[in-house]
Image (cartoon, rainbow, N blue to C red):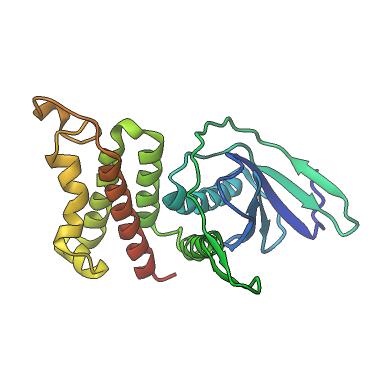
Length: 252
């Protein structure tokens, strides 16, 4: 029986791969403060309450949304392996409820970093620190807007593209569908996000026009080839830009 006088409630997750975030990050979410790093994520609720199964699933959706936002940078598969609820009392008495989930993941390498210093040792450029700061700012922005259905739909499509690489362009094209559904038509979506026709068509031409194995209309092509790394990278970058622009347009 959980002590209702507890002063802190933590939802604790383990995740794979442990290097999904390059360094420890602290993200403020609608439910509380999320600390992530080295294979563990702890969300401390803003108000220490007893957590029902339904509430735990809602909070887990928020945590998963934060991971999905980070996934736009590293294109890595991830899985939250469990969510345990820890109750801490005023006397530091601790009670824990454990729910375990299976995991699946695939490791991906990080980019090569550059760190330059002058003759005095002062850092002139640190590409890793700059990248982590950019990612943290983006993920923080996304985490405050995860109640938006269209944003969640786009993040889910990107996640599907990572996990189902044989249909990657099919899933990335779903991001365009989500935007059209949200804004009513393509022109309205492009206008709202300040996206050119050429940019918008980048994913569509690969998904629909090219005879690519990862595309949408494979049955209509006489012969198919795998998408090149450059083609996939271009589609991913465009998907990221669309999600970033949309997230910036969402009011909390």
